[in-house]
Length: 217
Image (cartoon, rainbow, N blue to C red; front, top):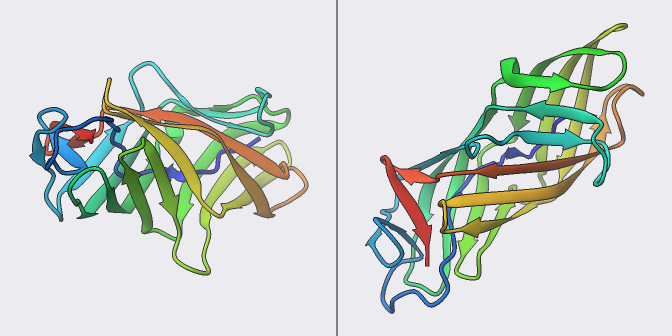
């Protein structure tokens, strides 16, 4: 019913290296490059950002195959590169922000008047982008990926908290994008108006480094 990241994102993002994988990359190139596959290596410390892909929305549904929940039309991940070895390999990032513009969020849940806030908690998260097109988002040991959603309902304000152990996405060099599909969160706190489960789906693109598109090799 309500969003949760899942970013976190969020953010996931989430998040992240929000980049893309490119099998068969040139020998000696870094996992993360700009200018094209096999291009210049993204430097440790660089900041990567990605909005929702044009014309898409982030959805937060109460079931994997349902359409009941919330939709946000604006969201962004921000991550810092912490490791970028030669390909094939695994690049690492620190997800420092995963935001949702709540003015762009709506809900079709009966009794919900508005989505007042979507916050990704427990940041930063660790992100790992590998040459096989897998992107993993992981919390610190003993923690969770957590999203707090505040709803305005006919009976007053309701706060719902959701958690996930990790998020898994897929990267794509076509648009330097990252996709999350039906990432599952479980309710950890909240009233009976909060559904017990939430599924996060979103595509973030393009991932950029100082304005240049990022590729995964």
